Length: 62
Image (cartoon, rainbow, N blue to C red; front, side, top):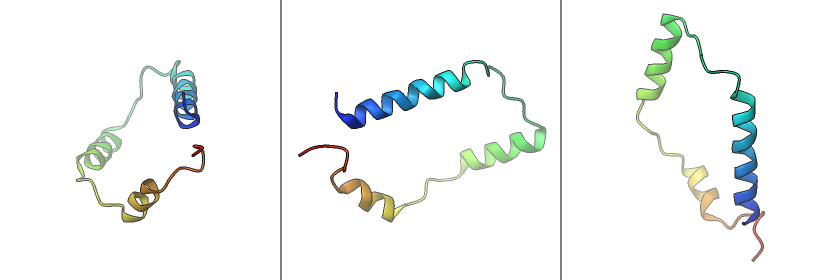
């Protein structure tokens, strides 16, 4: 397992632990509408993020 894979797996495990007791997320009608609007937005290009992801990771040895 690479360092990146380890870090991601630990982050996912921590997220599960943090949210384990939250099975219901209550939203007002306005908050629900806002969430739906956000989720329905088309994806936008992130050129700086794309450029960053194309470079080798500092966490991986060569």
